[in-house]
Image (cartoon, rainbow, N blue to C red; front, side, top):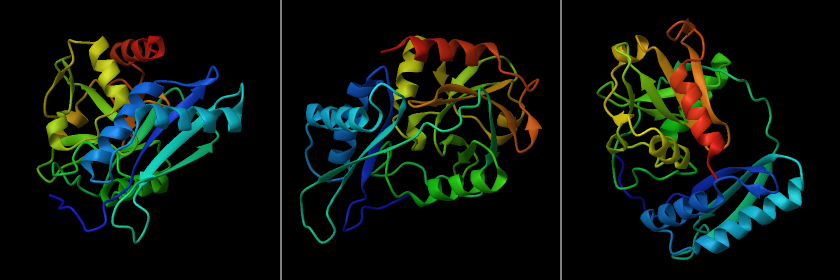
Length: 246
């Protein structure tokens, strides 16, 4: 379990610039406001955050597509105050299906900063490094008790071997993902439930949920097929929900 530090970590939100706007812009801005308050950074204005995201996307991409990130942080050496910094990057490759590895780093689990999307998070950075080293799209993090929490870049839905679709409980310490909230609201049959390693390896489907990429089926885990190795119906349903949301 983590403990608050003297200098609070920064947090960020990332969205897709498409159709001359940031997709899911309002909830992404609201999440940044909530995270900054929880981390002790200070008060932010959601409309100002959304305007900063939109301005960065408009300047960088115009009518094209790309990725916009807005970070909130406490200036180094300052006792109070919060600074916003926007950045952009190209969309890059968008494979229809993802591969993943299990992260060698355990998720730290719940704590005073649980649910926030922190900018510097050691266990997530180690997971991302593992994915890069393996040449995969994602790395899945389990907690110290072997329960699935989330991916390094996405929230997750797992279709167990019995055909029941579940999402790891947010109480395990995962990020309060905007894509997760929208997807689960559109698929109310998906309930929160713990997923252990054996259940994960026996899963029919694993679906990654990400505000930039939408819903992406994970068809290989540690080099082995997930289910029959093809995108499944739950992944298709979740993609439809996210693609149809505003």
